[in-house]
Image (spheres, rainbow, N blue to C red):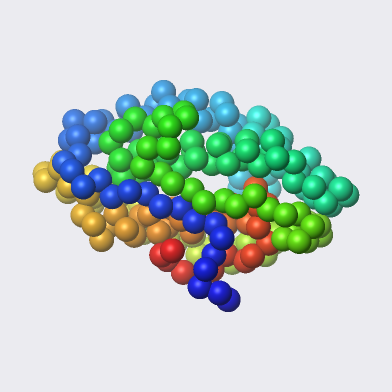
Length: 207
């Protein structure tokens, strides 16, 4: 596997004192933007060892038609790509705020500290029309790894919460670990859900 993976996520480290007050009340200050996020997404996923079930409305409705479009027409319409790109940027800005990585309130349109790289695919050259039928299955090993990584990230976030309250600083090692877990999640979603690449996500933390 090449060291270069086309899908990437970078979150700028806040080289400044973070707001301790909003950090303390983060779960409450995030409620309005989370409502907006849920209304946009309105998608729930449940993972088991046998299947990945998706009950989808709103943004989720874009997924199944996209599978059919790739399968029968071998096309990834640009507007679907743009929608998935902008929605992903918004979702990961919200995630960065919830995970204390940034104390600026998530914008619905400005990039802020979260930078995503998702090249627009050439469907004929870059995408196999049959893979969308099995990508959910191929992604299962990643899902199991991510379950444990996200549990570890949750513990790290709690520790970082205390660190920020006392020092105003998100410890750099903890910050990098949480970003690495988010990046891993983002690559799996890009492979199995938004279907922008056929290149299998690497089993690694880091870029």
